[in-house]
Image (cartoon, rainbow, N blue to C red; front, side):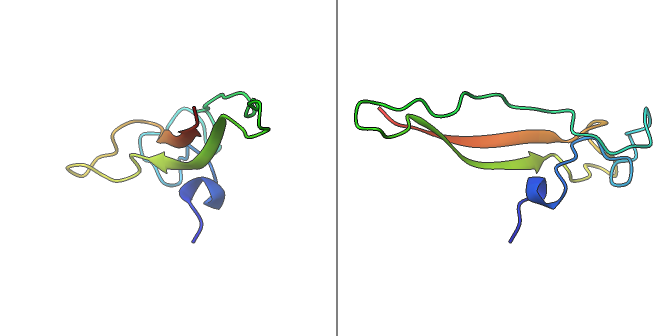
Length: 79
């Protein structure tokens, strides 16, 4: 099963979101920046991305919540 980001990754998508009216192009406009996992003294990464997915894609009372979808990422942070 692919996550929504793996399916297309477009957080601005006029095909799936009627509020996205500023451009006809699907765009990746939401980003989460994290440094590649810095290694600790044992060589293990201290920060690892576990999952990223688009959120708020559903309609609420017949409307989209915004002109773009949100992006949620789960991190594993070791001591």
